[in-house]
Image (cartoon, rainbow, N blue to C red):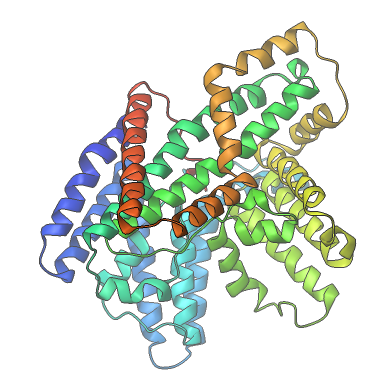
Amino acid sequence: MTFSSLVFICIFLPIVYLLHTLLPSIRLRNALLIAASLVFYAFGEPVYVLLMLVSATVNYFCALAMGRRANKAALLTAVIVNIGFLFLFKYTGFLVENLNRLLRLSLPVPQIPLPIGISFFTFQALSYVIDVYRGDAQVQRSFPKLLLYISFFPQLIAGPIVKYRDVAEQIEDRDPTLKQTALGLRRFLFGLAKKVLVANAMAVTADALFNAPLSQLDTLSAWLGGAAYTLQIYFDFSAYSDMAIGLGRMFGFRFRENFNFPYGAVTIKEFWRRWHISLSSWFKDYVYIPLGGNRRGRLRTALNKLIVFFLTGLWHGANWTFVVWGLFHGFFSFLEEFIPAIRKLPRFLGHIYTMLVVTVGFVIFRSESIGYAIAYLQRMFVWRQPVLATMSLTLQQLTPYFLVMLLAAVLFCAPLGPLVRRLRAASRRRLASGSREAAVQRELYAVSFVLLLWCLIRLSGGSYNPFIYFRF
């Protein structure tokens, strides 16, 4: 994975960008991006390129059938095929395992490799056909343009989930300027640094503590593992979103933000308005609102939210830990709906409450089984006196590099992250001249390229972990 990352950064991306810049027409540029996206996906999943092409073809013809009227049969076909592919590759083994346990059977459990990014490109395809059915998007009569939307490599395998109506015009016509390219590249480099420098440092500690025998964990080490993973998953996933948004901008696409400092939230409801925004928006538009949203009373609203949180958890993977994680968040969303006092907590207490729920939730999310999650949480909440063996394991994680990256992680996530941004914006408004603004921009570009060099050094040393959301 380290070698492939270096190939992508140093060879693949510069070549694709240069060719995209030199090509004279949007049609040729789109053809290049389609070819590059298929090559990119085939680098890790050669066989499943065919699956993505089949998915795109089915959705293309189903949408054509809905071109001038709401064709329920075409919509149903598209939904069945998309959900069928997702179920076949992601949940078949999970279903058979649970049937064996429930009915005491011995059915062979199929071992089907999970295509990278299937959850993301399936949801994008579904959003397209549903929007065409509703009349919220125009049917795309060019198969290559639809294929570009589904397969575009920057956000193909880990999001953000992009709705077709948000990029339809950009597929038809775009002309990225040098300034847009520079800003996109800078966003990409800052995302790369978040992943390689911060998220990977948190991953080393999280992996060491979650993979250690529970007998070697005391309360302090268990909390350190939970906190490290909570920071890891944010910096890992938001880094990929930053990189995807930056790459998209380099090629003339504007993707919506996927994170808005979620660790600054003071309620779980606010957390989900800030976390994985594209997924939350997808479930709101295509599940929550069709179920009735908040239009049928508080009890029905709470039930609709629980359904959405159940599906959100299940979307993340074929394991009960993901389902419980989703319902866990749904439960606290339910409490906030019926106990106004939670929503009215002072901001400081509300932030502590929210981060406690989020951290416990991510311990469940990270665990391999419900039993392990319960045992790990017992280590966190039932005091276990540190002894020499557990202290040794904890102290091994507290390296100088980890402590520096831990400080950086705390500073650049909420609640200090938004404050830093506001101070920066205020200082820019006070700038006396445009020349000073230009100087600030040059400094930011200089920092981004220093970070690039640092990342390349880390990558060349083999210090890379795959993105967490590659699993989903």
